[in-house]
Image (cartoon, rainbow over all chains, first blue to last red):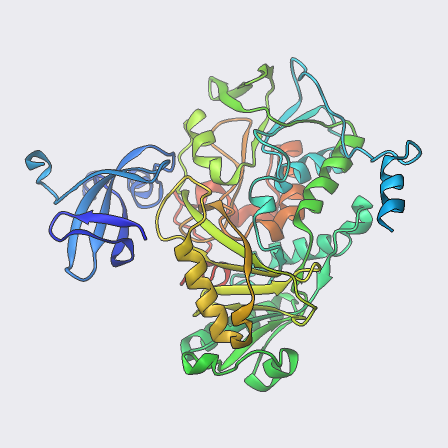
Amino acid sequence: MKLLKCPVNGERPLSEFVFGGEVREMPDPNTCSDQEWAAYVHYRNGAPGMKKEWWYHGPSGTWFIAERDTMLDEVARTYLYGQEEKQ
Amino acid sequence: MPLRLLKYALSREHPAPRFFRACEKPKDSYDVVIIGGGGHGLAAAYYLAKDHGITNVAVLERGYIGGGNTGRNTTIVRSNYLTPEGVNFYNASVKLFEDLSQDLNLNLFYSTRGHFTLAHTESAMRTMRWRAEVNKHVGVESYVVGPDEISKACPQLDISCSGQAPILGALYHAPGSVARHDAVAWGYARGADQRGVEIYQNTEVTGIDVQGGKVRGVHTSRGYIATNKVLSAVAGFTPRVCKMVDVQTPIVIQPLQACVSEPMKPWLDTILVSGSLHVYVSQSSRGELVMGSSLDPYEVHSTRSSLDFVEGLTSHILDMFPFLSNVKIVRQWAGMADITPDFAPIMGKTPVDGFYLDAGWGTWGFKATPISGKSMAETIAKDKAPELIHSFRLSRFEEYELTGEKGAASVGH
């Protein structure tokens, strides 16, 4: 069984977690062009590499960030949003 | 018998036929370079040569032909999709498949079995009725059946699914078939080779040369090849190839796993799919049960299979067929599926002149092999995509004109 470290609850079975996709910055919908917005909505950085991703621990309702290598499926570290520096 | 067979095998009178020439070194330039020697790439090469007379073509394959998702799918061919565009497209593929053994002069073991998509809930029944009506409208033989008809076609199936998720009905799709997937790749490879196409295995594309928005050539592990037209037909490697030309796509890679049981006497005539139980199962001509499941739940660029998958899948198979509890799983594997947000493929031209994309095949690529090859060959030859694949163009995302196939393309919803 694979394990993932939730920053609040520690190591838990991967089946308790939901993948939330890569952390991406939303352009300002009031000022960006239609094309920029369409790119934000649809396009993804699909190439493999070390990525910052949203993950959700279901039983405790915790959203957090994992830095994961999508080629090797190895998690470097996990932390709550905005608490990267404390790690 | 074994001795006679051995003598035959070693006899010089009957040498094993080669399917295609072993080309040593690529030429300096080609009219078209196809990246990816799977079914799609080889089919495109075949139809480029056959339909359009373009034979100065190289197919570059990083591994061996048919070793990617062409050899990793569960070989189901069907056209009972949800949108008229999808149904028309996949129906054209089924039509090509029906004559493909003749066309390629190779027995593909194409076997029309009938295909049941089981519904365990009222909302699933609603989707089945919807698909049946769209299919009928386009002229494809699909209709909704009740539990009695399912039992008649497959008496071994526990209609109550161990009491967990009773089957209320199904979408029956008469043309649903299975075929030998590796033979499709090899047949297309031989047909393309006979017409002059060159196939290079163990040849990796490391970069694509783009100047002034136009393709000029490709860098490979066997040197530089000049060309003005490149087709990318690389399934799970699409994001990496698109990065070489700075083309943005919505594609995310998720593994899709499958497995086979030990061989048994034939007992399962039909193809059964259950969206609620996340399984599809058929019996191969060798007697193995070929079983697949839904996508792995997150992005990974790897073809490693997992125990979680086989445990989950087999527990659902046992809900349907409790008597299989003593049957062993003998092989399991994974492929890298290139998933799009609307569960429809991405085919045709791109913002880079001369760079053509045949991608986004996720979990629905094998059944489209002939028609995607034919459509991409036409797109490359005329530099214009045929009407049949207009709804699958890359620019549909920027135009907010998605082709929603999720209800019919996968079992993971």
